[in-house]
Length: 488
Image (cartoon, rainbow, N blue to C red):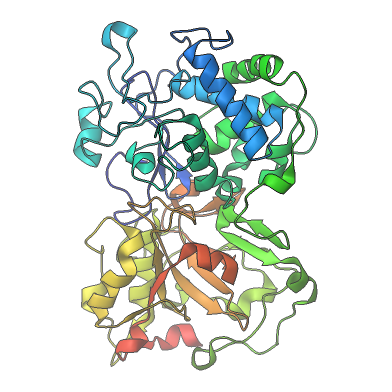
C-alpha cells in the first residue's frame, strides 16, 4: 500500500514498527498487508544490550515477565509464551519502553521511561515522508512496537495491571491480547503462515490452537506472521523461541483454557478474519424460506447452513442468490472501473460507488454523493453520507444501507475504520454485507487480494455486530428509492 492516507477513504491499520530506524515500516491497510518500501532488511534487531537468557539482566526480566504473565494469568502454554518472547526480542530487543527512532551511535536506544508517555528527542517517524503523511507522533513504541505508540499509551491498557509502570510487560500483553486475540481478529491472518508451517500437525485456524501449542517454533511463526505481519518470516525468531523454551519452559507448561478471556462465547463458531461467526445450533437447522426478502420486507429468511460465510462477487453460491445485492445490476464493473464514481482498491472506494449507484430520487442519483467522500476515515462514512443525502443515522442495519465503524474491538484501527453496504438483514438480525478490501484465504477483494474495483460478501452475526458497533445510513430515510435495476 502507498504511504499516503489510505482508503482515499478507508480503513488503515499500522503494523508494529521496525526498531532499527530503517527508512521504511510495514503498514496495514484495512485487512491487507503493505509491503515494505525500499526494504533491504527485515526490521529486526540481532543483539541486545544484555544477555536476554542470562538471569538478572533487564532483558531476561522482561522475558520472564512475559512468560509468567502469559502462562499464569492468561493460561497459555509455555511454548506459546516462548514464541511471544522471541518476537518481542525481534521487535524491541526486550526493551519494554523502547521508542522508534534514531539509535545514537548505532548502539543507543530511545527510552520513554517506564511510566512516561512523552517521546524523547530521538524518537520519531523513520522518514520525512512518513511524518508528512501520518504526523510527527506516528511511530512505534514498546515490546511489540505498537504503531503509533499512542495506540497503547492512550488506551485503557496503559497501567491497567501494573499501575506504577505504564510500559510494564504485563500491561502491554493485556493490550496485545485484547486488540487481536480475545476478539479473534488474529485468525484473519493465520493463512499467512500456512506455506511456512513445516512443523507438523494441523495448521492453525483458531486462536485456541496457537495459545495451546506445545511447539515454540510454530508459536513464533504464527505469532510473527499473523500479529507482527512482516512480508516473510524471520527464521532467527524460531531459533530464539527454542532458546527461550529451553530456559523458561523447563516444566513444559500446558495451557489452561479456562483462563482464556475470549469476548465470544464457546457456543459460537467464529471467523473474525471476516468479522463473522455463526452459532453452531443455528447452522445445523437453518434453511432458506424460499421467499426472497424484498426491499419492503427486509428481515426475512435464514442464512443457509451450507453456504460459506464469505464469498467473492464473481462466485455467488446458488443458495444465497436471493439475499445478494449485485453491483453489476446498477452498472459497476467487477475488476473493472466501469460505473465506479470512486474507483480504487479500498473499502470506501466500493461503498461510496455502490451506495451512489443504488439510490435514486425522481429517477436521478444524488450528485452530492458521487465521487470520493472528502475525508480519509472510512469508519466515519455513514454520518458523512447522511449529510450528503439529508438522512438520519441509525444503529440498525437495513438493506442497501451504508455501515461504518471505528471499533477497535472489531479489529479496526481507531483512526481509519471500515465501511460496507448491507446486502440483506435476516430474520434473526444477522446480516450479509458487500464490501471491498478484506481477505480470508483465497476469498476477498481489493488491496487485500491484489485486485482493484472488486467486492465480496460476508455473513455477520448479531454477536459480531455488537463488537463492530456500527453506524448506518439509508437514503430511503430522505425519500430515495432503490433503482429498479437492482430490485428486479
